[in-house]
Length: 147
Image (cartoon, rainbow, N blue to C red; front, side, top):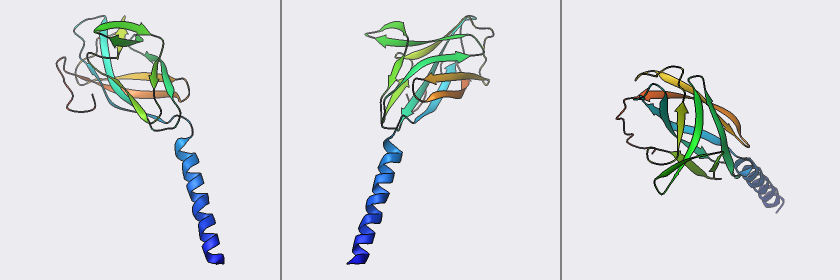
């Protein structure tokens, strides 16, 4: 009887600790990042997927890069507009993709070329700053997955 009680107590403790660890706070990661080689000397776009495995919603609040100003754009009904933030839902994703929500690089200090990488810092309301190395792909690149 005592052995069953001890085993049950240990199992309950493990489940409580597991629940606390996986559901507390936002837990963001970035994948499938890329920038099509810009056709313009002054503007470019960036795409990526942000996953939030945590139990708390987060928000992408700003983006910076050493190659120019970066703004976050939302696309609704084929209309693009700059927004202050985009939500990253708990246990969900925020997908920035061609034809949808995306990053807009403006006033470029240099025109990135295919094969180079561009460094960006993504700032989140709860998760802090995440630095991403964004590879520059061909202007006509279409990802197979992730977008």
